[in-house]
Length: 277
Image (tube, rainbow, N blue to C red; front, side, top):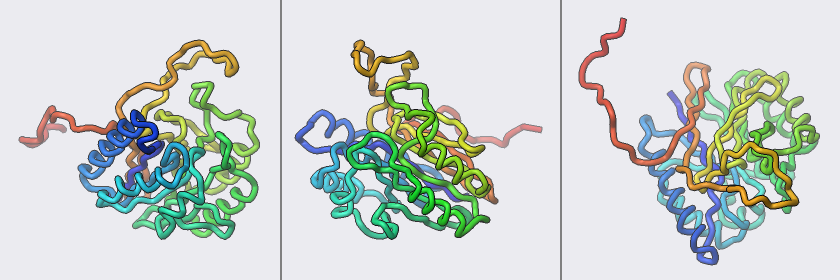
């Protein structure tokens, strides 16, 4: 069985914001420790955007220092908090390849599983920059191999969580473009996303979409209507435990697990044969 871990919304920062620096680094280290303890150990980690909080070179340098301790190859996607030029100064190379237009999007072939990473960053904007050019790139990349089970990774989810202040406009053109791109490409088993700091699932063009919990703090699950111009005192973010997604692939089957990071006490051990019939 082949496994790949997805981490997202790391929001690593510097001593300019000491609370977020300490909290987000500690939580990221907790996630990485949990992933390294998995059996079998994943062959790769994909960090699916919002790698740092403000897109600054010194934040990417801090992130690189943390990830230097990882014993698993780490690939990267970009989110709305990222900035391409500072990211590429620190992380440019084989784990963040560029397409012909300079976007961080690429495909990686594993044993029996293909991962296609899309760049949805539109610098200076919160929502997705997926457009016709990126849709064309995704279509070409998917068409290069229509037989291998494939996961598509992008930061911005094309489905609604119900947390109104985080959700895209369901009629946004980019969602229709993505749906049309996925519709006839049966090899796509799941679209993995981040951005919302919560785990939730849905369908787009008949394809499962799975959004991962953040390694940093989570978005509070409050599904009430909200007036974006009138603060009402509601809780927006919560210190729920950090998490990640584990993708498992075997014999053409692809499964996603939502995982809570941490060291937990064993409850039951396998000490005698199962008596199931």
